[in-house]
Length: 182
Ligand code: S3P
Image 1 (spheres, helix red, strand yellow):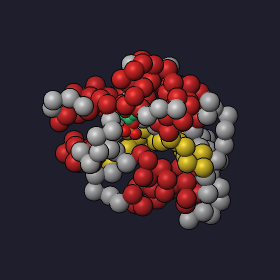
Image 2 (cartoon, rainbow, N blue to C red):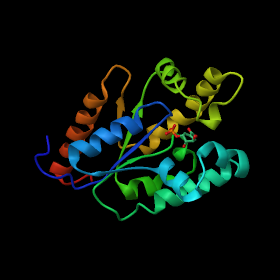
Image 3 (cartoon, protein in one colour):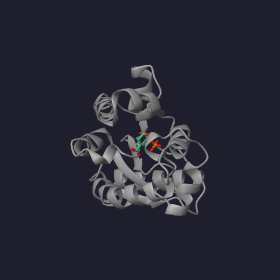
Image 4 (cartoon, rainbow, N blue to C red):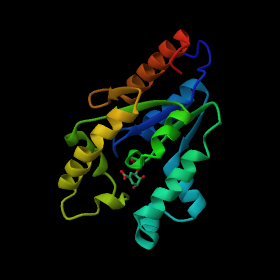
């Protein structure tokens, strides 16, 4: 697989439960890149879990920290970056995502997302009386943003993480081989 090194970082965007972290870790293993997760960076810097940041300082404070984490990655190399599902909501993050690397959006059907995110209750935005409806509303708002910001999209609904990772690498290689796009 690792025929020649990729000359770009990979940046994964997508809704909660779309597979960014799992696919991102695999990508990093396949490429020999470092895996970083903006959520984990925020948690480490704040010294508290995301649920506490939301509860004590509010979502806006989390978004500030998220942007700072993303900005700190600009100029770094050999990275696979998984981002939080809401990173696309701030317009100032869009150029930053592109500065960090080749932006790929992962998607999955609403049913699959619901099934995946129901496995844990760590996500503050889904602590609502009707998480399924919340997912629907957030997806409706964000789908066009993922669409707009990503250079390439892949639906992970019926694919294994390994299949998704291999397809992303193939696409990134196609683009870097042409030399033009990333
Ligand atoms: C969020 C998604 C989470 C995390 C935070 C907010 C969102 O990341 O950043 O709970 O707004 O969709 P994941 O997409 O990794 O779950």
